[in-house]
Amino acid sequence: MELEAQVQQHEDRLKQHDKELSRLNDVTIEMQKSMNEGLARVDESNRFLREQNTRQSEQNAEILREVLNRNKEEEKHKYELRMIDKTNIWKLILGIGGGAGVAFAFVLELLKFFRG
Image (cartoon, rainbow, N blue to C red; front, side, top):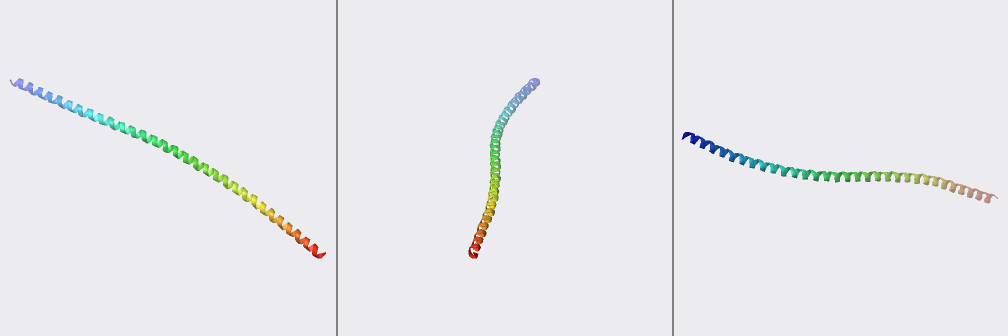
């Protein structure tokens, strides 16, 4: 009888262990599902961040291009202004010289007229 009781106890323990193993297996499966869902969200987040980073890089490249083009145009404009300044200085010098020559010639003609 005692042997039967021990066998029954062992069987009960085995059933209890089987139930516990099944419960642990269910918990493990739930944990795996949760991890997979978490990893899927992380992958989606990473994909979104990569796309956002790509767009930001493209925007930065466009901004840099625009700044470089603006600087290039500004340098060209400054060069043109310097050339205009130099041209205007020569025109001014020639104009003053011509005006002075005309005035000098006029004064000489006046002197000739009054002398003689």
